[in-house]
Length: 123
Picture (cartoon, one colour):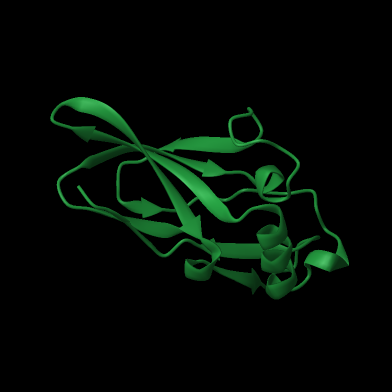
């Protein structure tokens, strides 16, 4: 989840890393390394599932520390419409600006919420 703050740009799509990418199992530009979603608002809400259910990932702190070891930043690519033309903007989000919280549920495995917070596009 998150929110994109853009002054005068229309957001068309956002490309986010997958769990496989964050775990170091895929490269960013591979088919399984990222997911692109159409945007009709500036709010980001998407659910990604993972088969990783190990006790190693039962706490948010363990998960974020593991991700930090594999990736220095989280890359996202936002496609915007500016002056009638499509433009891709790549942003590297720092782990210091991201929160990961464990959600309690009755399902098998671990459920986490990743909050990218506010992403500002300076255009």
